[in-house]
Image (cartoon, rainbow, N blue to C red; front, side, top):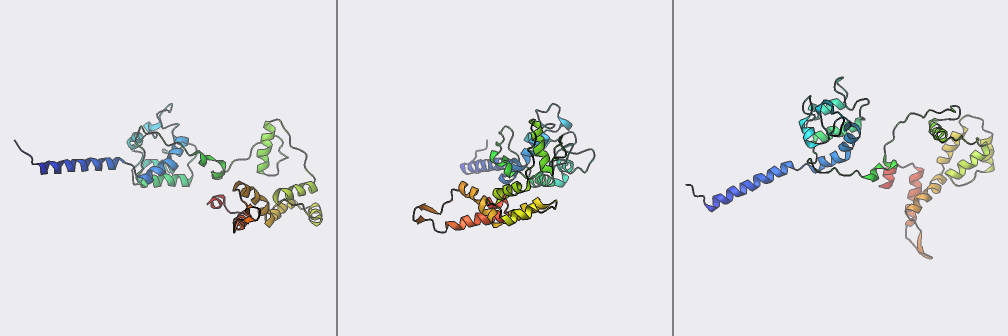
Length: 285
């Protein structure tokens, strides 16, 4: 019979606790990698992959499940889908790059290059995922707002009255009108069109000389040049800056005779930002 001294017993207990803590630490996903998964990877998987590679799919393709931690680690019929830390050895990245005729995901159309780069960065950082059984973070609905979406190229809508559109945007407008059984209004004469453009973009009427010059301009791009001229006017920022300043509750003074010092600098910055076509994300920051 071996009698263990208290000191030895304490040392073994400490080592056991330390080993358990290390094991638990190894199971905790890297926060940055996990955030990358939740913000960049999971939304793409849900939109483009879960239809064929999830437990809810009518038929799981290739035996690959991408909606669980265990499924991603196990892989499918072709082997493990990812090699954490090494995108180049990961079948998933190979499929996303469309380099193999027999292995292309998602089918139909490849993901944009920036999205594929997100997958590579995620795998390179360790491919962290939340443990199975933990609910997915709900998507940030604020990020779904239209003004925060990247531009996408949409084919022009097919319309019946094909002679009416003058550009691709007109096709979308006319398509909605035809969908509702409506027809476009009659075209405005040049003088009316001129006044509408001036009031809409700079809030001021054209001078008599400007009106005569536009009416007498017979060139096919006369209206396009008019719009460019108005957008380049300093009055454009003054006109449209007012709407943002109302949202920001801008004011020069709190009460009569009690002015906010230097408040005009923000007003002038908003006007200048619009006139310089400052990108929206930079404007907000």
